[in-house]
Amino acid sequence: MSMSMPAARRGKPKIRPPRKNHNASKLSFEEHYRYAYNMVLFKHGDQLYTGVKQLVAEHLDSLAEERIVPAFPRSSGTHGAGKLGGGAEAVERAMEGDRFLKAVKGVWEDHTGSMRKLKDVLRYMIYEVGLTLFLTHIIRSPRHPIHTHLIATLLSQVQLERDGETITRSTVRECVDVLLRLTDDRDGKNVYLSDFEPEFLRRSGEFYRLEASEMLESGDAGLYLRNPILHMPGTGLAPMLDADRIADLRRLYVLFLRVPDDAGRLALRLALRGDIEERGKEINEGTKDEPGPSQNGEPGMDVDEDVKGKGKAKASGGATALASALRWVQDVLDLKDKFDRAFQSFINANPRAPEFLSLFIDEHLKKGTKADEIDAALEKTIVLFRFLADKDKFERYYKNHLAKRLLYARSASDDAEKGMVAKLKVEIGRRLTWQGSLGTADVKIRFKARSHDVNMSTHALVVLLLFDDDKDGEGLSYTDIKASTDMPDPELQRTLQSLALGKYRILQKAPKGRDVNPTDTFTFNDSFTCPLARFKIMQVVARVESAKEREETQEMVDEERRHQVEACIVRVMKNRKTMGHNELISEVAHQLSSRFNPSMALIKKRIEGLIDYLERTADIGTYRYLA
Image (cartoon, rainbow, N blue to C red; front, side):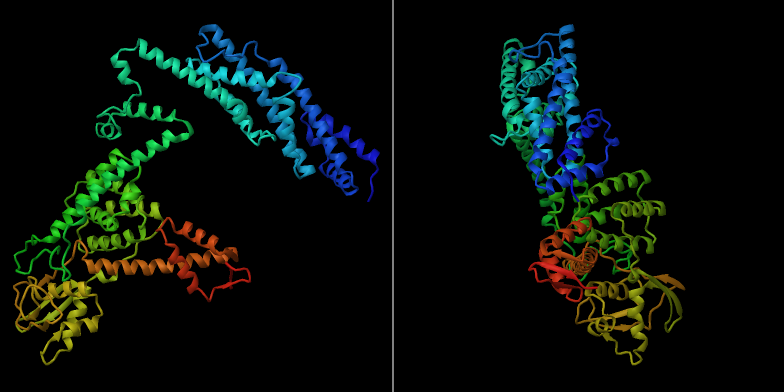
């Protein structure tokens, strides 16, 4: 494999004409790549580098001569920041400037396209060399005043727009982008910062000083107040938001955009966020100290019959807790109508937000609510749902509320239920499953007087079947029932209340009282009488969870999250095979963010628990997946 230098030189005329005529497809990539490879292989890389650099420089000089110089505007200088005049003169100036900027942009696009093709053949850093050559032979050409015309034309176009004329913004933006991408090797700054920005800021300052002077001299009091002077007492950000002064807020925003280094926009953003968070804290504080239901489930029960059999719901602390939950959601919705930012921070600051939101939906999907009210409420709650970080916790609450509505025939509409489930499926892509513990059963019970067909909950049936084996009539203690059924205390207490303290008292409790305690004993009531051949025992239902139930719900949620984190870790490692510790934690957190925000400690703990699937490599901090 050899190549003579004359053969290498013969490659030069082959490259020049097609590339210059935008017809590179006629060139052979393999042939030119082989030429470059052989020259470097035989220690002629410096000659190749110098030759290509010279060829590109000559081509740029010819482009400047043929395409840019003829497009020079006749007068591109603004001579300061004053007005340039309107009418035909301004239109002509705008057209000349646009034509010149398009010529510069066209040469830039041709050059970068050519350098990308050269880079494919020569590899390495020839593209950066091409950018440097464009700066020295086009922008700062020693032969032609392109630099002077370019800076002056850009400033002229900005001034024309400030005067109300129409310019082509895209062309100006693309030429500014050229200056941003070119770097001066002497100081390391891009050309925009070193050549354009100082003059632009100087003329902008001069322009706004002149505008302010004219406004203060010629404007009346009304005009002065309508302009961005908004830091006077009583006209700050909060009063503007309270009064919905949209026009004033727009002027305030435009004013702050003029502060250098984006400091104005940052200050406005922080002030707005702080105002929203303060309003959110006021809503959370309103429900922070509300009393919840007691552990035995008595307060806050949603029953069709009370323990005295009068068929009226008891007025208790649970009603207050429910009203507080509904009021919290409604207040949040009202605030959402005014603000659509910073919601996530204060909504998730309330740990009971998923429960409250599910309760709000439950209340609106029950019978008695108008169809248009249901649709409006569901649309708004879906918006709030998007801000929840613990969507899995909301899902658990919603499953329970949905099952109760359907099984107890309290749903306002099947279409509304299906619509809400469809909305949730669109948002989180999850299917809701039924809760078996909320089923019902029909039981035939024989008493001394007669037999009755009784409809009751599944849990009530389980408890009642225990007394079928109580032949001696001694009864069962609360502890025995709990040991046999393994029900959680709140659920067991509500079940025993419905059987022993409701309208139809199939069981008798000793000692008598309205509460179910762990020391109580229950016996089957053989002497029970009822004029109805068939009746239904309503299950006592807590509308708002007690503190203990919330702890149990949180434990179940945490357990589900552990399984989800482990499944995600295995899924990621099965796909990647090998992965660094920090990278794995970041990827798992990202994939689970749509469901909840897993803590780093949880992910680390689950990684340690997956010893059957992962192993540490010799490289510390890296895991390997074990098939």
